[in-house]
Length: 378
Image 1 (cartoon, rainbow, N blue to C red):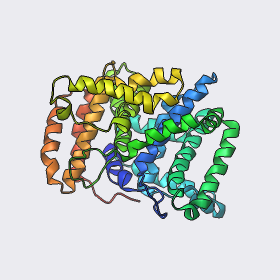
Image 2: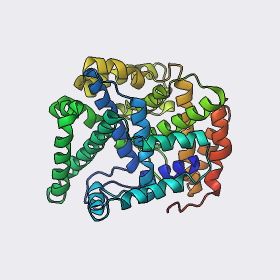
Image 3: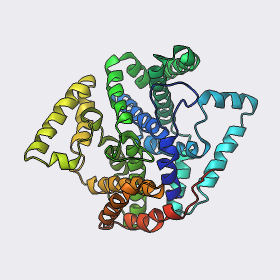
């Protein structure tokens, strides 16, 4: 099951473009949308906590990622098409989605991992968290629609009005959304964050499946969850799952501002890497932290600037490198000869990781990429 989801993420998840039947000036992949939804949800969660609410942020991260699984198989059936389907037969779409989950969970995986994903998907008890998720999805749609509407106003008139109506309805009950929509600085912060969807990984290499930094962060977050769950079951990993996933979500955000400067360049001249660290801090102040409140900056800054200094960092770093392994693997499988040596070098490095969860991934997930059917659908 894990290889199935990872393969779908690395193919359908990054190839499937949002607003595919609309003219558009930017291409946002499904995984780009998932990450931005996650970030908006975390932002709204912190705003809710400013108003003395308790928010289960770990549940929100898991719920958004797990709910996105069905789109990897079904493709992106937009919300207004779904609304029309439900007018004809309200139960039919639920049956279709259940068939997707039955298909995904038919593949082999540890039961404790399957059960947690299933329980999270079907949990409808957390009212505040579910409200934040729905608001975050609509805000992500709004930002996507807003950009393209500037050029194709007539094409986007109907969905734009629908999204704005939905946001206006949601803000009546969700204080954090109302605060976001009233504050231009918060919107500017989130707009700058969205630049990650245009920052491509492996930018020096020819790609069969170009993947953005934003989509890469979804993969790392999912892999962090998988590694933690397996490790916790086998060896009782005394680490916070939320801290792992939050670090995975945030650690590459500076690249939205500074772009990705590769390690050989950073180390080419003595002291250049240290200067870049100072420049990164200054640029983040000007482009991101200037627009948010002090408590939020104080909390998220370490996750962005010093992500590899805490107890959780070896685990997240492992997920980061394993994500790179799968990104290279999918390229090799589809004929990119320039990734053969890259894949071998990364795999040699992963083989040195002394975690039971990494051993499981190497034994049950990596090689399955060679053996599985490329045409994964219902």
